[in-house]
Length: 244
Image (cartoon, rainbow, N blue to C red; front, side, top):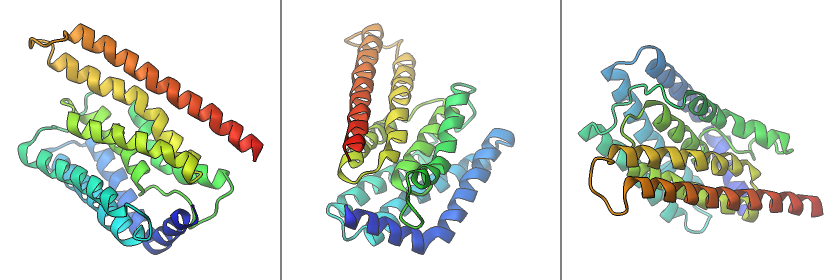
């Protein structure tokens, strides 16, 4: 645990000016997508998302998380997501046009990266040993919000990577004492349902086994199970805090 938090402190202390620039760029591009969408803005956002994922892979994991075990594998994980954005940019898979769906939920997710450091401060941590807006889970939450608000066609591969990351992040609540990661874990359950529901609807005209109706029912069951697991984990975590 000490190594984990020391790497976070080193990362924040050394990169906070760059993180401010990245956050400002994310805010400006998101506002432009809402207020003045254009092909150039959509391309800029995709380039930014690719760079942001490569930043997490290269700067966060390969440079500052080098003392951690398996940091290289996690770097590969985020580099793959960066490559997915590059591929998306090349083939124009996602239009990044405003869908008008899930607006309130998407806005909540856009705000969460800024909530992460506030949550850390509320838990008694001090800078630089806090979760910041440009860390893996914060970026994952922002990406989910972007996909909900602006993706008419869900990139199901990217959605699966993000859902997988949320499940991985849940383990850090125990091992490294980061209850902040519940922000990502709790948001992924409704996002998971919405992503896959849209994917099932888009392919409803195709003959599949099981049928889209059965797939949707199975999706509901899956999300209920995951949500129950998260709830149980959260209550258990509160008991652990009470014992401490």
